[in-house]
Length: 163
Image 1 (cartoon, rainbow, N blue to C red):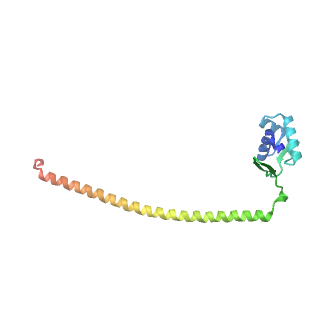
Image 2 (cartoon, helix red, strand yellow):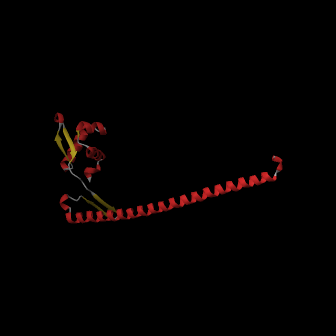
Image 3 (tube, helix red, strand yellow):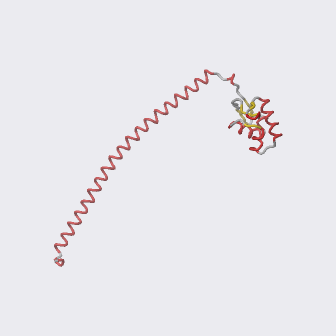
């Protein structure tokens, strides 16, 4: 916890989680003096969180060496920190959790598939209703136009002044 309590160390880890870097690169990117970067890297390396290798031009590159999982439980009456090691992983339990999660995902997918089918069916029904309404609307407009034109013709016939 003390190791990760320093904001510069967290910034260095964030950078190293993206790609391996050498001291000058870290220093320039994070605007931290090379001496401070070296001190932080030494502390992180001593804890086993990071490791190094020599790359091009014999530069020493640092990288995150392993996944780190940390859990913190904090309440008014309790404070616990746990960092489960890989040895602590119960593969049977992990397998069961993965299988259960997979089953839930498959059930959700089936439910989503059924909902999609229902929505498609409703869309087809709506489309049919829309076509029927459009057809009725066109018929009403045509009837209205015919009635209006017939009415106009009758009015013209009654009015002899147009002759």
